[in-house]
Length: 112
Length: 115
Image (cartoon, rainbow over all chains, first blue to last red; front, side):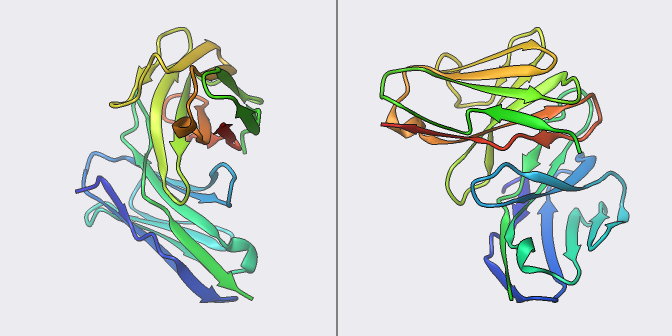
């Protein structure tokens, strides 16, 4: 079993739709949770960074963490064609090492 | 957000030669930098963790003699692919961490093609 599971998609939605992206993880020791957006042939861009269970909102993006269920989500409201990209969840244990464990990424296409 | 710069963004080299990729943190000091490799339509695979002033920690299966990592200062880490072969062709991405417990920022990546 992978440490972090993420549906690779592709996920296709019409412009304006609410998008829900999800990851599950197996190790309860993960402390920090991140969502990155990666456009084709580019490096990942940090979207959201959360620590505790609950919701964190930033503009059209909401990150949700449920540590009891080992489940994280990213919601995108009013999706735009420019949101079309691969979305990667990532998490780490914190502390000295701090290396990220990534999901496989979900390819999102927002159709105009 | 913090800026991490990689250079070159694209490089083509002949089989058997070595190529160096630089990763710089432009507006912060990075105690730790990470090097990843990404195959098309795949996720990022961590190759090694680079700590300033000490030897890099390589992930299992990564050849340390082939992928030389140097983290000589708090703003610069380099990855040298030695004796490159076509199977080393890939997208290499670095990331940097301002300090313990802080988030991690990625460079734009470097495309390596070995011909």
